Amino acid sequence: MQAGFKQEQNFMNAVVKIYSGRGAGNMFDILEERKDEVENLMRSISGFQAYTVIRAALGGITVIVCQDKKGAEESQAISRAWRKRHCATLSVNPPMVSEGPVIINASMDRQAALSELADQGKTSVKNA
Image (cartoon, rainbow, N blue to C red; front, side):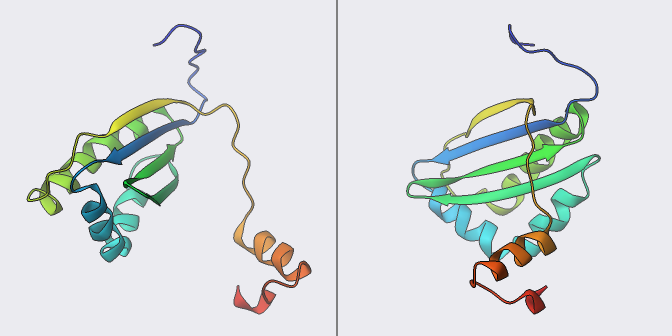
C-alpha cells in the first residue's frame, strides 16, 4: 500500500490502464469488434461495478471499478489472459497501470440520464 492511502475493506477499487505505442490502436479495434464478449467477461468478475473503454489518439484507456481489491486483481488477470488470446500478434507496449481505492463515485442511472437529456431536448425518453 502506498503512503497516504487509507485502504479499508469497504472501499471500491479501480484499475486504470493506459495503452499507447505501436499496436495499441489495433488492440482497441479488436476490443471494439468484440465489445459484447469483453463486456460479458468483465461483468463476470466478482464485485464488478463498471467497465469503460476509451479510445485515445495513440491507443486507449480502460477503467474497471470493482467492489473490492480482490475483484480489481481478478480483473487484471482476466484482462492479461484476454489480451494474450486475442492480441498476441500485436506489438502492444505494456500498459501504464494505476490501481487503488475509489474515493468518489458519482454516477447516474441510464433512465435518469435519458430523462435529463430529454429535458435538454437532446433525446427522447422512449429510447430507454
